[in-house]
Length: 212
Image (cartoon, rainbow, N blue to C red; front, side):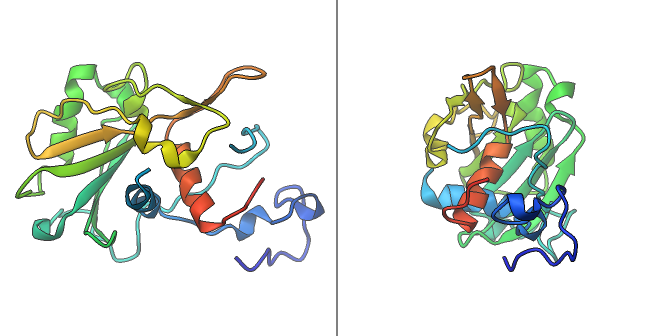
């Protein structure tokens, strides 16, 4: 992070009112965030309407979007399950992304018993040789999702996300699914997030000590 390169600061980038211009923040791919969470085994200020969401790159450059090949190298799988769609990435032991795939079958389009089939469809090209961890963040853990993962209450240590994970039946002996919880701030009215907390963990590990 080298700071903002804009000549004229405005409220859009924080200006003098912020210790760091928002436009200078590194765009961290969601698969890298998930990798850091998986490797670690694992409060900040609440969001406001004026605060921009952290931008997340959908994939690394050069990552295939179609074939989920290289199955012999797949160590684990990351999934970001939203309301309107969900995305998946296969990763090797070093955390390198091998391939990515997306599906329009978001939480809002599925009944509870349709989630295993939707995940199986997403991973149909992966010929796994044994039980493989599948780490899921987002709306799959909502009350109306696959299996509710109760919120962690803010302030909380994001490294504890994995401890709060729930493990639904995947319908396959080769997919060991863990769904991460979201975070809820109850003081002053309920404010909740699902999926963004995993992005924030990536930001925290990239910019130690950052606050804003």
